[in-house]
Image 1 (cartoon, rainbow over the protein chains, first blue to last red):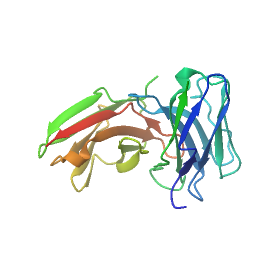
Image 2 (image 1 turned 180 degrees about the vertical axis):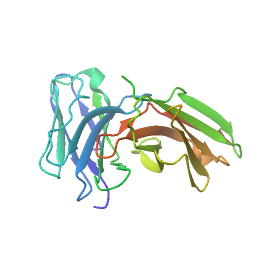
Image 3 (image 1 turned 60 degrees about the horizontal axis):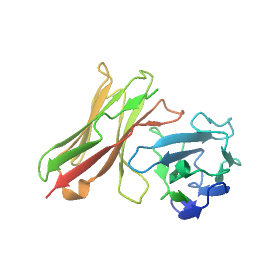
Image 4 (image 1 turned 90 degrees about the vertical axis):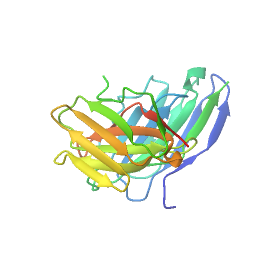
Amino acid sequence: GAGVSQSPSNKVTEKGKDVELRCDPISGHTALYWYRQRLGQGLEFLIYFQGNSAPDKSGLPSDRFSAERTGESVSTLTIQRTQQEDSAVYLCASSSRWAEQETQYFGPGTRLLVL
Amino acid sequence: DQQVKQNSPSLSVQEGRISILNCDYTNSMFDYFLWYKKYPAEGPTFLISISSIKDKNEDGRFTVFLNKSAKHLSLHIVPSQPGDSAVYFCAANTGGFKTIFGAGTRLFVKA
């Protein structure tokens, strides 16, 4: 595909369950970001992958959150033992490190609702 | 530590008038500044950017101004149109490192 895709588009889960969110970046983009946007709030940085460098995990809110990316391909964000405050839209973005401004291209997001 | 700040959560403007969205930053190492626009239920999309070596960049109805000494940038939309109603995010990066986003400003353009 031409753009960033995310799946699922919507996810409803029960408190305490684990969820896995997937992001397919634009082919060739070395950088990949995960953000969270709670209702009525701004973009909250979660984690950043750049090529084969160690990821910047400084935004992950707790050890229940983890993310993986193999090379420059798909990334998965896993939330273990979900809590109601995890309900948000989870956005993925990718960019090319060779683009001067590192413009990010966002996916449509995964809307997570924890009951 | 908010390195990029958008202090106005919302702004309301009459159609045809100018919209001015403001952004302040604290990190003097930022090289590039970007504005993204977000409609409900969609991911943000890139709108316009400016390099730290410039003080103005214009693209149609959109102009971004950068004041490095004040660590301040602004996005001007003129004339504003109802379709411009969205959330606007200011962002900054140091080229090759992660981009930092502001909290966003919701713009309402009234017809």
